[in-house]
Amino acid sequence: MEATCPICKGTGFVKKDGGVGLCECRFSQQDINKSLQIPKRFWDAELENYKFENQSETIAYTEALSYAANFDPAEGKGITFVGPPGVGKTHLAVGILKKIYRDKGIRGIFFDTKDLIYRLKSLIEERKTNRAIKAILNHPLIVLDDLGSERLSEWQRELISYIISYRYNNLKSTIITTNFSLTGEEKKSKKIRKVIGEDIELPKALLEERLGPSTVSRIYEMTDVVYIRGRDRRRV
Ligand SMILES: Nc1ncnc2c1ncn2[C@@H]1O[C@H](COP(=O)(O)OP(=O)(O)OP(=O)(O)O)[C@@H](O)[C@H]1O
Ligand SMILES: [Mg+2]
Image 1: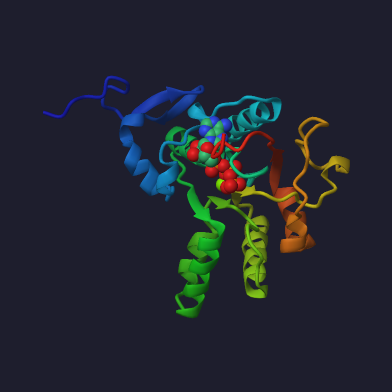
Image 2 (image 1 turned 90 degrees about the vertical axis):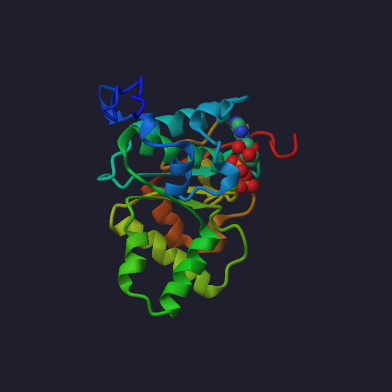
């Protein structure tokens, strides 16, 4: 006889945040990670085990939590985490995907940006139907991890610009992580929702230089931008 889940009593549903969500028993840990295409290194990353030691990390955590809790695929709203290596940007992006999947049953997909552009390139070269490409571009929620992480060739830049404009035009939600400031002018910008504290030092390298102003302008509008400073947890 199959054991009945003590939490949902075998229904698969539980009360959550005033509504109904899927019970955790519906998803084994491994299934969730595979389903969301999370890289193995981040299989244990959850919002619940993200630790905050300073104000910017606390705000980043709060923003991540509220983004996941209020996620509505119809709005096409995203979130961008900017900061130096090892502060937990990818950890937060993964944690958000998992929470949205567990609580709302919406399956986001994690992409390393470089991987995604090579994947799309090969689909285009193999003359795979538009359907395969559109299925990726139209997905209601994706992570673009490490956006702009290396020098981009012209076709890579164009492809990223295409992905961003497509998602912008079609109100699709995108979670971005990047080591780069958007324009370098953020502290003056009224549009940036979260420049955290006066002491935050923006990364010197600019996404705008890598991707061009029109792509960055769309990122400004389609995502809330959260700046994180902190120690590199890979090192200390
Ligand atoms: N605040 C945190 N709480 C718990 N674990 C953390 C935190 N920050 C980072 N880590 C862990 O440290 C490692 C590095 O974090 P992560 O890869 O998310 O950093 P990142 O900001 O994405 O860095 P990069 O810019 O190099 O991609 C991961 O194993 C992650 O789970
Ligand atoms: Mg990362």
